[in-house]
Image (cartoon, rainbow, N blue to C red):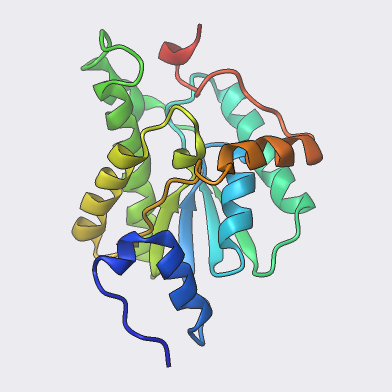
Length: 205
């Protein structure tokens, strides 16, 4: 029988994966996916240990066309790749209003500032809520694979939401150990669309 994880161990993605590997049941993970390229590496890492539901919920994306394109690329990835455990997909409706309302308060902030933290919280909050209502054991995000995404701040948001929703958050920094490089390799392998901006109008050059 696997040992019970301590609170500190729950913050270590490698210890969590080992714990799950020693367990009899495959836990369910609600994984927020910002885009197919980032998801490619993260799902490859986590699929051996979790039954994943990939959630495409990104109200920060500036147009319905771009939203549909990115969602379609995630669907494409999951149809082409093969994983040891099933990976399901939920594509949320395109509803930019919540992001627009949150971002309006920080319209003059530089990219990477408080506006981005509000955006991370919005997306992770929806993920945590769906994990709770669906009876999932864990929730997580692909955001930390991005080279310009602050893993420490994202994990702090996830940890706070985990307490609010009573669902374990999987702390991560998926860009480490050449994670971002691997996402680029997998994007080429599956011919995935690699967008030139995070999604919101503020991030466009």
